[in-house]
Length: 379
Image (cartoon, rainbow, N blue to C red; front, side):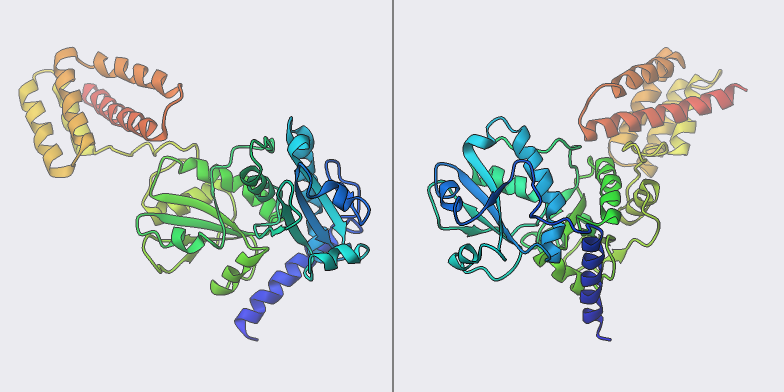
């Protein structure tokens, strides 16, 4: 069987199974915050002082049924807003019943979502993803001063769409990790929670992008392009245009995902977002720095040894920090490391930018390594 046809059949099957799980639920059910529109009230609600977002649906249509949880979340956000009722109306029209309304706007596909600006009966066809997050993002942009939001965890991953997908994954300066998902499937929803934590881990790495793309709409073409046969699927795109993607094939847990990104992107992250405990540490430098507090060792000789080793093994800030620590050890002794570690640990308890935190953790790593060598030399 043609591989592209296989991909398309998988998409259809996944959607069918998800729709079947909704049983008899469809968009005709009462949804708080959403108005059921018909030929009698449509013109009373649309084209007036408020903007309108209206979905034309077919009750038994698979994609229409899959919109129920998304429209329910949108309606809930509408109800919680303190000004949405003054600026916006959210509606739904059963296209099998309101045939005249459907024909009035020349609608064939189902579901079709139309946006009407205030005072206008000329619709703009909504072409973004059919999920509550995308609806809210779109409406917040189109309706001035609208305060509409969902009470959810902050989103750290990058949301891709067909209009920006290629530019992001082909950016030569960034490695990109992409989740291809269908928002309504339990498997995708479960992975989204973990995936957001993954994005948070690499928040401080500007050359790493943790992204996701909803393949339930026009973006489904990428399922065919990359021969993706299941959702959710996660792929790593190395830096550089047209780089060959690598599929993540292990279990979808945070530890495995972090390890995979670390390996592929050359990073050193722990699951809490900190850099690893050995990051910035060079054992030869730590051992040389520790000798400055050893009885009978010339402080000047130890400092010079650190400088020589730093020049050989390291470049940049870490080498300079080793030299600074060694010079202060020569003056203050081992108590300097104890005091400095305590100070830095207090600093880590406060809020700071990710790159600043990385620098502090690196210094803690170096000081801890030197302290261990001091203790070894004392025995």
